[in-house]
Length: 409
Image 1: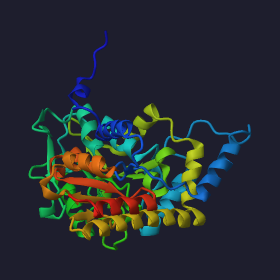
Image 2: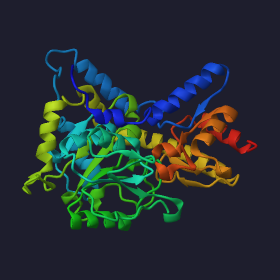
Image 3: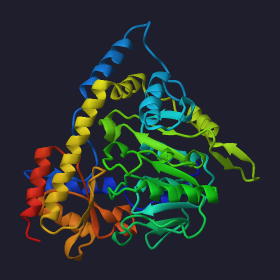
Image 4: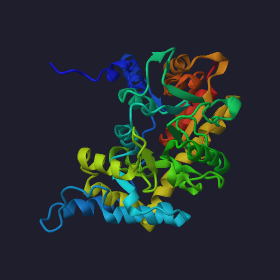
């Protein structure tokens, strides 16, 4: 009989969003006529851009012909997509990133979770709190988290993000090897200014710390002092890996495509103290365990950067940000405290009357038929908050806000 990786057995209960889905399904079963509106899980509702659909259809037709069909993708992705990424996401903003530093994938969730494959179990990891659960759970799986005590992992350093510190975490109190940062932030919807992000890069340079920077929501940034890439900060290519996604930018949650940047100058240490390039190690991992995003999908991603694609994708992003404004303005009009929703599709809402996150979730579901995400599911500092998303349809979003405004708490 085979032995199991017992780190998986340490994981408590269900994954957060699976637990929400279970509760919502039970409610719908017991209330089949209820009109449930989801402001919870951040899945998109707008259709893909016409330019993207056209590119997918053309690529699909190519797959039907012996002369134009494609098999396995190149390890890093097709040159046509890598070129589009370099020109539009980096060179256009004065950032020097080359094609051989980019790895096209099936999404940022996979990348942030899989990156631990090439990191030692001995690394001390820090995460912001609240935190996207994947960062923590995959480190539990990889044996870096220690033991769960009082809802916190013993070997992970938590960096609280609270209203008291304006959701700007303090630097670690002791040296850590790896830091996860996500900005614009999921779940709080808040951001770091350029000066604030520089503090993290400087810390990493001084302490030889690796930053895993999740920039999945950079397309929603509206304020000029909020950096879209960590590589806008001097020295960041020596210490940071950046993850990006087409899921929320272009609605690819069901199509699956993203990419990560691993700079060639980024070095890590072996147990004996030798320094090695992280880029080559990640390339070896990907070549062994991943056969690349599909050709049809990569052509679709390329179309996001076409003139028509840019305009159409921007219209969808604007649509979601308008929803965020409706939620934020509506809730604040009745005295509820909100954060985020300006440079991100998430609104972080303080629960009234000292309700716990799950108590407020249950009341919203049972009394208003609105699905939220309990903040406690993102960590201890998320208690007393719920996350609302702007990815719903506009009419449903307006209806949900009206229900809340007319609610007798």
